[in-house]
Figure 1: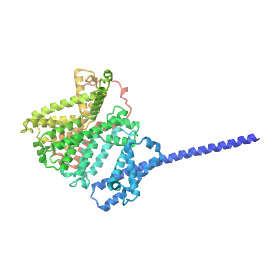
Figure 2: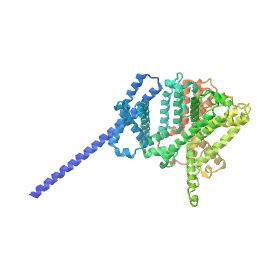
Figure 3: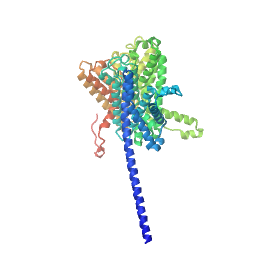
Length: 622
């Protein structure tokens, strides 16, 4: 009897323990759900607050304001500041392990700066601080606004990476990112402190599209329309559009919020031409470091080639050097100097500035995949130097030079040499008349480089001979290398089509180059790009001719070709276009920069390929 009661009591105690454990597990599960939902809500609020913060800071920078307006803006910025602080503190309290595991040095710096602004917000400024300069910085509006801007930028970049991780179509993400920056840039360029004269939205949208798509066409005079702040915004749009929105976004997101998802890394790897995921961050660093280094060296070189006859101040010379170096390397074709590269003081002076510009244009048009390959070649060369001689042969890579690198360099240099000689011969007694031989050679090379995508002009293109005009249009159509800062159908595409043509004439089964067969997929894509480019130019030209019947066919064809292949050269009809024609030309620049084939692939349905089930037959091709 006693044993039976003992068993009953033990069973009751066991039931109570199990019920208590179940209640505990349910509480933990519900608690985790609540925490997860709160995290999601706070993250969404942080993204919204980031957008609000950047808008407020834009209004603060772009408009003239008095002391009361500055105080009002500062009070409004307390809202996103409080949300940012809540996001940081809540994350540390709820997921401390993940925060420390995925922490990046840049993330810690920005988060610490936000918390410092919180301390400055909570405690009034002391009358007798221990470190007066530090106290002045911490309690200044400049520090507060800079920290809020950095945190907002990083938060939005991280949001974009999370969207990429949801397996959104890469082509649509790329197109959408360009559209977003074009719209943002169009409003920024209209700010009162960015322009010297009022700017219509159609002109602002056109210039923003041209900058993000690194084209160079403009409906307004850049030097007289935009202030130094406007030129800074314009150069920022060129830089973002040149390197690509995803490259910038990926860089900031990875270095601020840790490693993204595998899918995000795979997509970013394809966009920056990294061979493996392990090389993703080094490749991003290499691309950004190489770009900034070349632009910095180019700015220094341009600065010392500016003739003193221009009468520029030191500040103006620095502004021109930086803007011109950026515009040249990104193949944008914008200039902040009256008359641009055709300025008579430049033309009559030393030709060194044209040589520096040509080098920058060529470096930007050669393509990031080739630059990455050059890095691999250099790394391999250094490794072989420090490797034992007996291991050198085994460590040597047989195909260290990519087929893409060989094909692009040979084709690019061949086209440049042929076109330079042709320009020199055709324009010797025309636009080059009266120049010394050295100057004629420099201008021939320069004017054979700019149609590839740069868009600068030293002479009026309308003065070219018809033969020269045809060569320039063909050059604009070819453009630069794939995944470069140049436009056109790309040198890779042109080379693939020519090699396929050679194989067809010889009766070979496949196109070959440098001991390698070019894949059927590459040939098919090259043919598709050529066909689409010709059709797109014809359609855009027809639309503008219908809207602007007073313009000549030659001028419209040249302008559309320049816009669609993001060149930027013009016969001078762009400012004369009506608003509908400007919008059409803007879409041409966008389609040419993003790639109309990528847009079509992105919007087309990804249905199962049923063509493999059909029987094969031949059609008559003559």
